[in-house]
Image (cartoon, rainbow, N blue to C red; front, side, top):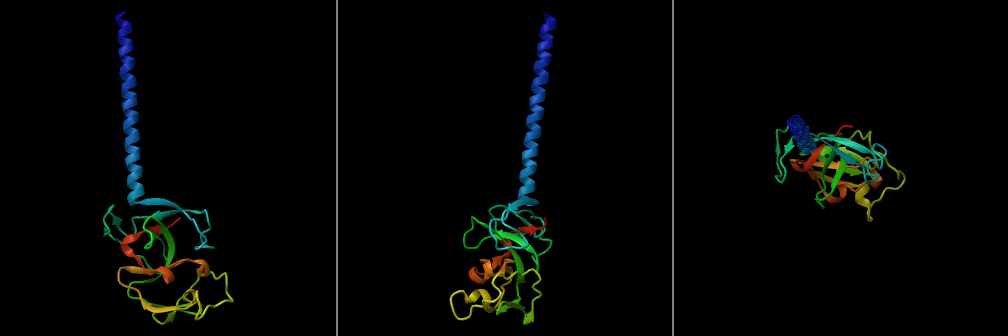
Length: 194
């Protein structure tokens, strides 16, 4: 009888230890996953064709959130900023018009740059921009002096400090800085890398 009780208590001890170890492991895994997602890497899905042909609708990307600094939740400031977004970077940022949405676009100009678009050609500081990623699905139509003209002829404007001018790679079908203004660096979530 005593042997049975010892065996039962030993089994209960093993079961309670096993379940406690599992719960601890699960809690640690959840905390690590939340930390990594909040501060290091996050996955995003491409919802629109504004970055075609570089990124297609439904593509999944990973965004390095550490590159441009660590954002503390609910505080619009970056800490440990290693570098700022640069021309050509593909970034994910909080859409300025509706802060519940994230946008992905390519950085065309940074703070202090003077940007102008003339008949679909981009000029940065009065020099033609090497637009190797730009895709024009409507190459023959250039709007001038009518609704939509801002798509093909814009500026000149100077990008404010701590802001970037962004455009989708599908230049003719992208709702970007030409229409709603500049993206604030403090609202950049990270740099797309995979």
